Image 1 (cartoon, rainbow, N blue to C red):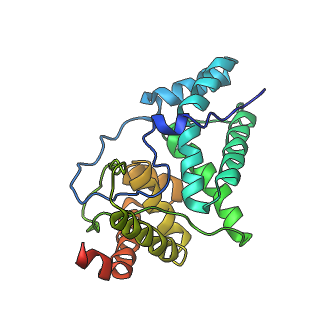
Image 2 (image 1 turned 135 degrees about the vertical axis):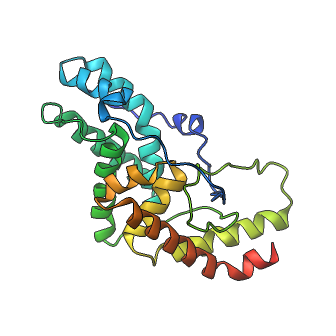
Length: 230
């Protein structure tokens, strides 16, 4: 089995090349709760479990870029993030026979990815890399993944502020608990619902809401001077 990461797949997910990470302040209804078997990705995994190798390749093609992006935002190291993505999908491959659909496939996948990232963080070699924050989030409802602006044509002073904000956020998120960082990245960067994030972190949706709120509050306090002048 050969798993190859296509660097161009990142663009298809709308992931930022460097300096932008937007947290939208908006309301969003809870996603309808469904059986895991209603998830098309679960069906692909079950087909793979029954010996259909092509189903695994479909899952890899669909989710590899997201796993790389999550690991990169968590660790701040692109090369290691790609290696972790390889490790994550290798683990999925090896668990072919043991897989049981107890949640959405993406929930199970990011739980594996999160564990790999936590193991890396415990080694103390990585510093979180995150991009710019637009507006603080009040934590009352779920928010969709951030929308990214086109930086082409930005004046130099605006790019400088964006870089300063990115560096500040990097420092802030490097200090908050890993669980808060995971909750924020999965709910904002990957657009997972609170229910799905709760499955990744093995906690309640209420706890996820609290984690996201506290992480956002830390960002709000740390960026107060920048936000007040924007």
